[in-house]
Image (tube, one colour):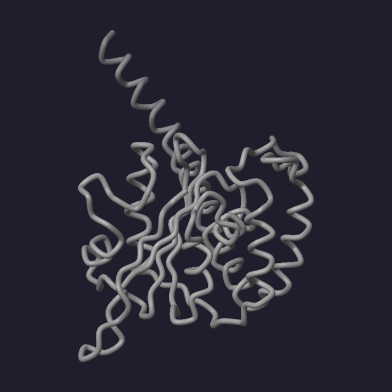
Length: 230
């Protein structure tokens, strides 16, 4: 009797396996598409800051005190209200076009390592559980540590990810905004996924070179940047 029961379990597992595998592929495809959309949105903002400023004006009209009401979504509580949106609009009005960011598999791999860890333990910020930062994570992937990093939590789509970085609500030095428009970076790697507290997260690692190594061995690159996460 026991052997027959086990046989039934094996048969059931065999039938279920393709369904599970298909679901995993669907999730992976959704994450991949989302990551591509985030990079596209970043480059759209870098290519035409003035147009992005016009879009932020519409977003600013959705605020009531510290709450923002986007159509079809629950109200979101912000720290500063509409003030950083207006500040971002003024910033973008003066911002010149900057170079397109190319997709980098090494940077995306380092971003994925951090995204996967926080998806499992619910942590936030740039430090891994062992205390390492983006530079150390890139070195583990065989690159250099001349890497910048920004992270968003809770954004529902690519537009929300980039808007969160540019508005930079609650970040006193607006470090995310400055890194988005840094004109010396040329490569980016994006990893997005679920977060047990904020539902979604995106880690974006950027650098002058594809793998975070300095441009010239005889000349140091810029320091590893890790701006404060939300």
